[in-house]
Length: 84
Image 1 (cartoon, rainbow, N blue to C red):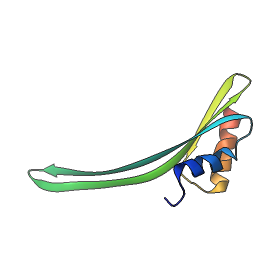
Image 2: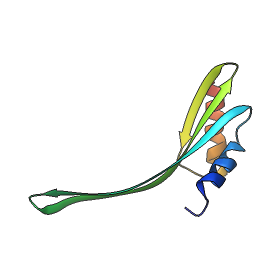
Image 3: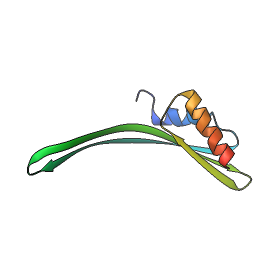
Image 4: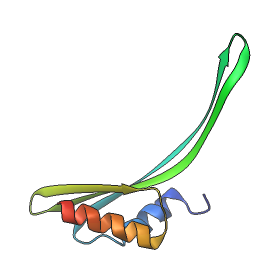
């Protein structure tokens, strides 16, 4: 990820209106499974997601995306606003 998580959160929050919170979650893991001392499966995860929490007149709404484009962040912010 070339953009820092703080910069991404700031950019995401710029797409929300009113009371909102943007949380960036960066998950990285590498797992290997073995059966009878033989490797059977290897999984690698490197994913970044953004979660929006919006408060509107005492109601909350959330939405998430792992598409980090401005259009996807804007759409997720709008979904959270609509849910609130």
